[in-house]
View 1: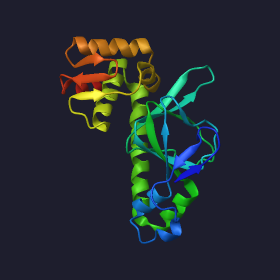
View 2: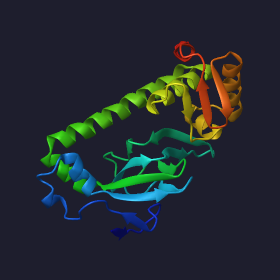
View 3: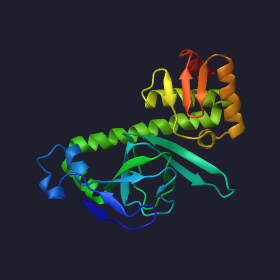
Length: 232
């Protein structure tokens, strides 16, 4: 069935999968199945806003397909991208009352939305779900620490190489990587200019590390080179 929600970034219609019987009837279910039953699903178009900076943090989200970017517009007009999320990734699950970042669909995406309070009740009832969400939070923390190192200490080639290696790993790609984001997104994520990102990618191509058939595809030609470049 379709449920109607209003508010910035939430659109008009969400689809709730499965039964709408609520948490009280989910005690005998696997906790991850119970979690799915309190979620609602919606499609987002490319560049459509999922939530805005300053919105109430009453929900958290899981990417079913497509990609999402978390970003913040700085006082001087520059955009900072904090993270990219892909299918299977969760975001927006924190203890803050308001959003520090906005979330936007990088490409056409399907996203699940979960109510925070109902999730907290499920966590109280299910140690398995608590462990699942704890591991998700720890992964996010580890990624944030790696990114702090990348922005604080790495050169431009090291940043781009580390980004590509991370994308190959996260997208489970061995030789061919399809990137949904534009070069401007990559630049705002790495703290570089678009020109620098393009120049570094071109140098990797000249050196035989990668091939670039089109703007959204990277083909890996020298697997050992990316970790070496990323390590300096």
